[in-house]
Amino acid sequence: MKTRPFKQVDVFTATPYLGNPLAVVLDGEGLSTEDMQHFANWTNLSETSFVLPPTPEGLAAGADYRLRIFTPTTELPFAGHPTLGTCHAWLEASPKQQTEFLQECAVGLIKIQRNSQTQRLAFAAPLLKRSTPSPELLAQVAQALGLQAQHIIAAQILDNGPVWFSLLLDSVDTVLQLTPNHAQLKNLGLKVGVAAVELAEPATFLIARSNREARAFGARSPTNQGAQAAPELEVRAFVAAAGIIEDPVTGSLNASLAQWLIADGHMPNAYTASQGLNLGRAGRVHITQDDHGQVWVGGDVVTCINGTVAL
Image 1 (cartoon, one colour):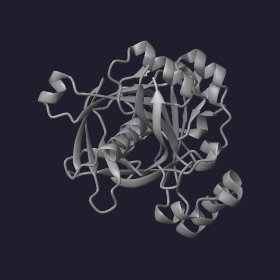
Image 2 (tube, rainbow, N blue to C red):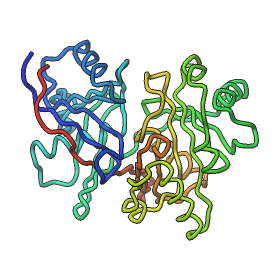
Image 3 (spheres, rainbow, N blue to C red):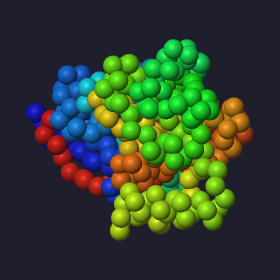
């Protein structure tokens, strides 16, 4: 074992402890895959990341660092909240002046931008592969979620490294009231994402949103975040198949949802998604599509723990 720099950050929030936590080991050199997986299991967070020097190929392509990402049970080729959280931690440990960075991970090279005014980071959504699920599989997932056919507007299997069985539902209330059979979802071996468009008028929306957040947070309702970016899409991620019942805020899912929903006309090319209310969180994911069609997934990050780890 040796002492390694370590941070625990909260991603997709400007307020500590209302987003998705991430453990970041800033020096992963010399650790085996088994070492990394064991530590990720011990942290018991949805993801733990390890920063490494780029491979020769990555270095030649301009990568600033390499990232390996682990859930408590498996390694991921890519994930969104570890991408933003690790870049934030890496920049805190070694400040840089530039506003564009290149991360190497198992899925390839991921572009990251930093807004020069807000300092908010955003990653370029990886190439998306998508397909329509079979009626039989859709029926199995719907049963596990407790959904009726009339609740489902559209369904796609989305693959941007992680594979998400994704459903667009009829209302935000349908999304928030889901009580899935997680054992069934685990047996299906699927990670499932659900989303619904917020259709209320602004005044009604603010009242409904404030009531939902008050129920979730009580006195800690994050009204400052709601004022900064009223969400237009509600998202939940069920990942029993990966060892986590429900993920608080999910970058890879929001990235693939954005590519699907914008392309099919369900969402505009810039919007804010909310995720985590059922877990007492207030995640905000900022989506934009640039003039070249590239979708960018942004979010605030705050450091909650700063120190070292014996590993």
